[in-house]
Amino acid sequence: IPVRESLRDTVSGAKKAQRLLNKLYSTGFTAKAVLNYTGDLSDESEKKLLRHIEAYAKGELTREGIENIIPIPIGMSLQPLNMKLTDSQYLEIKQYSAIQIASAFGIKPTQIGDYSKASYASAEAQSNAFYVDTLLYIVKQYEEEICYKMLTDEDRRSGQYVKFNIDVIMRADFASKVQALSTAVNGFLMKPNEARAKLDLGAVEGGDRLLGNGASIPIELTGSQYVEGGENHA
Image 1 (cartoon, rainbow, N blue to C red):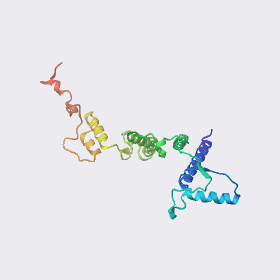
Image 2 (image 1 turned 90 degrees about the horizontal axis):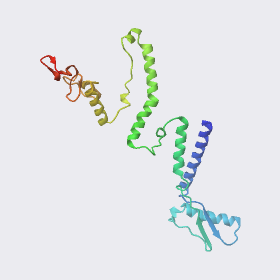
Image 3 (image 1 turned 30 degrees about the horizontal axis):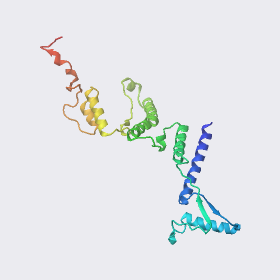
Image 4 (image 1 turned 90 degrees about the vertical axis):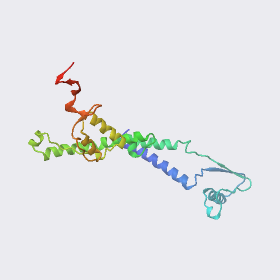
């Protein structure tokens, strides 16, 4: 089935479902009913009787203090035709429609507001995935275009390049950010002052040296614990 035709049918069904819900709200969730009576009424009398009963059922006489009572003439009985939204799986159908629309455009259901199966952790991961799927490709194009047009051959040979800082968007919570920065410092990837700058903290003396492993020693002193008298001992 073509995507356009599938979307047309899905949206058409969703609109009818919404009209049904709006109608139920306007009638006070009063379903259709069967009025049983014995006798013969003219068409005009029948319509007048039905309008009278329906006014009570819809709550149109609330201003007069009549809210929950429907008077039925002698010899007549009113049998509601119960219709429950749970029986018609109204909510499930609406969720399925949202998934169909998202699938047709190749996007995730959370991007159109369907969080029925999302937890806090998964919602955060999906939010990051949204930026990766939509923003990263555009940012990469801008970076390559700027590098090509703004930098000279000499600049490129010297290793210069343009890169956007997407940390403004891809911010993690404080605990995750501190843990990641601590791992980077302990693994010789970042200097302490560089990690502090990521947290908007000022530089400290001695923080411009790479540190690592459990003892947090400078990288140039790695292995010195095995040296005695200037010689290595096996």
